[in-house]
Image (tube, rainbow over all chains, first blue to last red; front, side, top):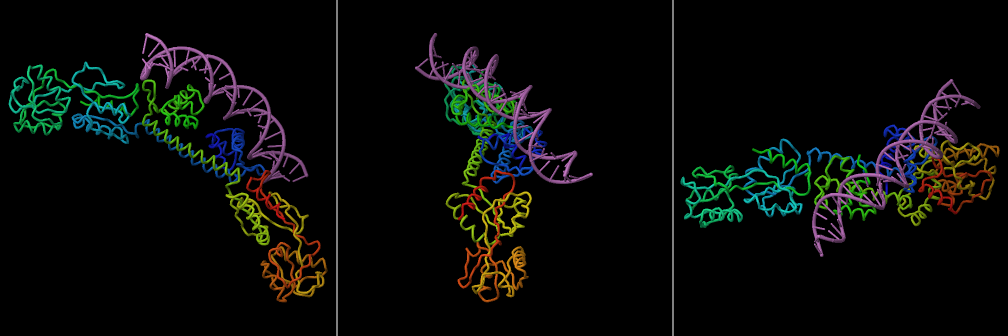
Length: 286
Length: 286
DNA sequence: AGCATTCATCAACCGTATCTATGGATAGGA
DNA sequence: TCCTATCCATAGATACGGTTGATGAATGCT
């Protein structure tokens, strides 16, 4: 196959019409350039130049190949430039899968930091529950996943690395001023997603009762509206409260019911620069 | 700048998703491929792959560069194929400048041979008198020039090589049956181009008279029509008669008045293949 | 637990590009 | 006409880089 440095030499000789001038331009010695074009002709079996007196002139085939060479070299240059942009994080994208609460509470700030600090680095966000987020991370559909778990002693998911982001306390939401979970054992409860509901049942079991779950929704606004309407009480993560807070409601932190929030990445360290940048920004959030 | 063999390795690893598989495909050893991608990453400063367990996965930057690499390699391939076509004379073009008589008498046959023997090789023809044809040859505007001269002892034009093609006798065209030039000394003459007219004067001078040139034209049909109309006599090259012959006219070969016909090419041997092919065909014409 | 696979590292060999020095040829000037 | 400067090709020496084979570490499967 054709050799790139030969093509570069050919293009230079074609542009300057002289072996010596091309050598000067390329910072080569003249014999080196002469040798290159001789080898190129031998390798391709084509006559690229015709020697005329003490000069040379391109043949039709030589002109054609020189044009192609210039084009290829141009593409090479632009590919190198594009790669440099990726290295400097002024190009590329990061795809992150995250659950709804973190999406509204954290990602807007991340996006704002990216816009000023890494313009050109696209942030793509996918709203998914943790199990699916991990699956997407393994499948390479996202570069990072923001997940949570209640029990930090449970084993880490296989094949991914977890970076602890923060602990998110769970709050009891009520209309009245009674702050204990057990005090609401006979009321109706509003549940969240599957895992949140399971955790709610567990917390209540610790207090010795089974909650009567009247309605389940992931929507933090809906949950608060239902409680405010007197439908019952609910638990809600602190991050959700940070994003939206109904004025009529009281919130009491439930001890020992923190959500442990992590960013998961795939593969061995080091993480690719865009992913590392996302991690940095997430870690530095207040 | 980026190295092509590295890019080829990168493209292969990207396509197969494995260093070992890429090595098999490229007929490289596995460490060689591993080394190549390590060097490519070091040279570009970009993280192209992420090691995950016993495998590897492309990063965003790696995917981008691999795509560009595949594109560049494709262009390289097509350039090589195009070049091969030129070598095999199934592509390219030959540009030839020729004077009118040779154009109508020789070039159609050349064109016919090219069409069957070198399909894809374009033949471009320019109608020019010999001095201009030589100038165009020197300027690189044509690859060959078909010229003639009467005096073969005159020095060859500078900077070009002449290949003798044939000797084209000059004929005396008359309405009657008198075949000698001197026998028409008092008639009126029809002249051709500048150089032909000068030659006519010279031939007549050898016979001891100066011809009375009543009309001059290059058009072989017009010359014959004028003579047939009784306007006078004329000289005409054999090749012209070969292309067009007025039935009423008699033609007598003038001894020692041959046109020497040559193909001129530029630069040192060997000629580029398309030019050599044209020469071959011209030489083999009857 | 054992085996096969995968990728990274190391040392040795080989190929090839590059340089300097030299030669042959040509174009321009005295 | 000769001389000189310029240009391209060739030859030999050096050094850089690529390829290979052997080896090691880590992982996933049976």
